[in-house]
Amino acid sequence: MVNITKTKRNFIGLHTLFAIIGAGLGAVILHIALPGHYFGGYPFIPVYFYLFGLFSIYMFDACRLHAPQKMLLLYLAIKMVKMILSIILVLIYCITVREEAKAFLLTFISFYLIYLIFETWFFFSFEVNQKRKKQNKKKNETVA
Image 1 (tube, rainbow, N blue to C red):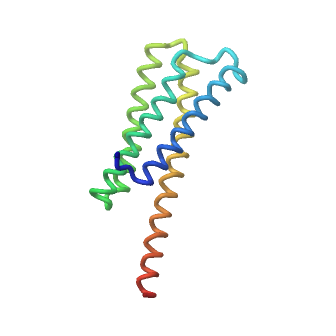
Image 2 (cartoon, one colour):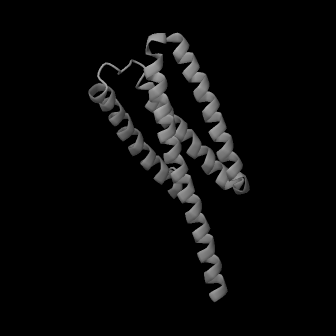
Image 3 (cartoon, rainbow, N blue to C red):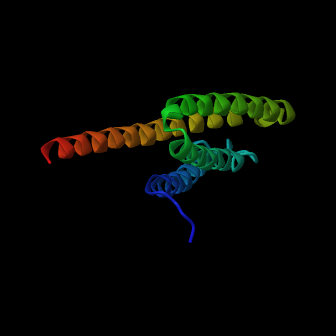
């Protein structure tokens, strides 16, 4: 059986649900609310953010096990890598597919910001729960 932590399982579940809802909602918005703005590269965007999210959680889980004191540094590094990789991918797409560049760019930025909020919320709540567990553990040790 695969050894998967509760945090990783929760993140993958929420992330998958978020990706499916976000991709579907984005497609509906591009088809209905903004007719004629759906573009061929749209499916690439949710897949990119989903795969990067999976990469992130596996990196965080490995860091939590092997170097928990470096979690914040890893979080910042992953955010920088994501930003740089995203800029490179957007530039490549916009240069190669000029007629869809504006729609792609606006959609990509929207997904980037939405995922940034989602991932920040998830990891912030994870850290708050970790801190609470440590405080409860210390409180129980002093009482006992």
